[in-house]
Amino acid sequence: MILATKVLGMSALRDPLLIHKATYIAQKLFGLKLGYRFAWLSSGPYSRSLSKELMTTSLPCQCTVKNIEEISTKVANLITYVCKSTGLSPHEALDIVAGIVMLSTDVYPVPSDVIGELRRRKPSLRREAIDSAVKVLFPYLRPLKQRTQ
Image (cartoon, rainbow, N blue to C red):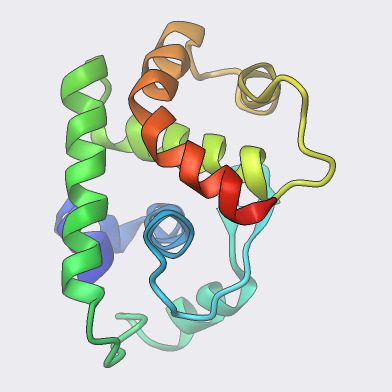
């Protein structure tokens, strides 16, 4: 899948959860129209239809969406920027970005303390790492919040 491999390299194809998170970010933050619906599961954003596609084909989303290459680059650049700004690994950055975006916009009711909620749901994530990532993400989240209100 071009999206996951652009963001995390070929190793992403062996971890479906990374594919779910990268796809969620591409759809939610950058408007990629793939039509997957996501819900929060224990590991973060998860799409049943994407999971089915991953099981039936080894490379999901071999679609003809004309801007998938451009949006894949944007997701990769965002994750790289978060990593450079925070010292996180790409997997940690992807986990935090997807979690913060989903808890800020796609969970009802939206928690009053998104960072605290992410820590509660994913206790392995360090508070400092989440705080650093949120500072980097803030410019992306503000327009997103305005669109969802």
